[in-house]
Length: 455
Ligand code: TYD
Ligand code: MG
Image (cartoon, rainbow, N blue to C red; front, side, top):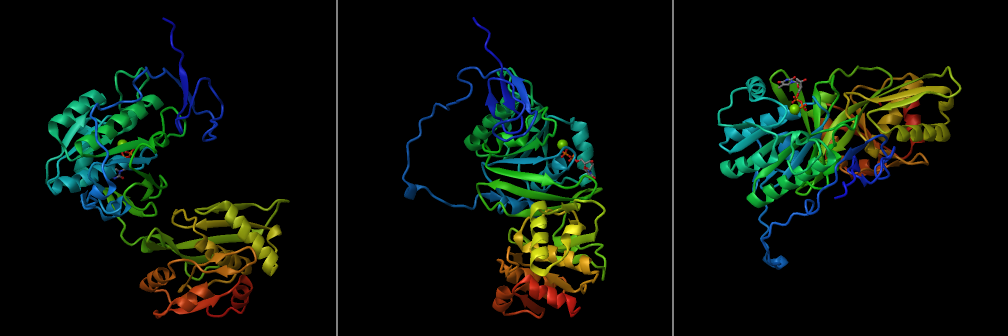
């Protein structure tokens, strides 16, 4: 029999090709192709053999309350109100960011409430898990632990123990023997996930899968299986900073706009229920170039500090950087400032930073960026009780944004006194004790600012 030829997979997105390629044509990443044995015939499509009859839409019941709350509010919010029974959730993130810690903490909360939970680790020994668990506090309930990487064994154990919730840490260590490729390869990751998917739906258990994000492309990244699972959450944060953000990227049972904020402490992760307070920690008072802007993450308003540093350039090409927000947007706003109010930005270096390490791509941050640049350019500080929000268009107009009431309410709650906002939003807000300054365009904003008035 002729030896079947190996195939190549992109470890980023799972694109399949018969030959090696330098750049993936699907996701455009470089040097991510890995060689793997091909799938044997019949392996890919699995049929359960049970024939199900079609049903009438009207006959299908839609009782949407079979959710289990985790006890971690930040987690529940991102999931859309708790764990949906029978769902498959992928938790992705860089190695060492705290995925295992987060999931073990969820196990603690769930077992405290007498849920049957099975934690399967392919990376750590039971002893290591125990040590981590001890750091998290006392487990009141009983948690089932298993150190195993063979999926066939795992299937048997799940069938025997009938847990309600299973954690797989991590998918890149799991393997099925029939597949020739090594654990962590695209075909293994895909196949094991599809088996877990069938288990989740068939046995009606909720399964959490941990997936490491890899830069080097040695093992398949979580993007390979994003389309297979019900919910994709990414756990992010700077390795040095202690806060972590859990972000929904895909959710078949809720919105993807929500984020959960945590802080990594000595005893595990702590929920940050008031992110505004956290993000504004250490904000300087009365310094030029520092502005507080109200942004929204999903349904939740978060106040962030936008900083800008504008100074004379020493090069032919001015240097520009943007941290925590979109680089191109910052350049665009500088062009608008140059054209509409004659700021000499072409001879200036400009560095813009959203302090606290948060990443915000909302247009409502525009006004904050512009004010921070103006403030640094003119070397005039804004009053430390002033906040702002609003989108800026190419003609310099300040456009209204959504959820203005929530933004103003959050600022009021945090003790701010003055809000600079789009005129249309200012007219629509009825009830607030804050002083609202509605602006129509950045010329008006510039005038207010150069008068050094109450901003
Ligand atoms: P971990 O959950 O092992 O990361 P992942 O599973 O995503 O690879 O988290 C590892 C880091 O978290 C490690 O650097 C130590 C730190 N950590 C704390 O700071 N406090 C704690 O209570 C725990 C359990 C971990
Ligand atoms: Mg881990």
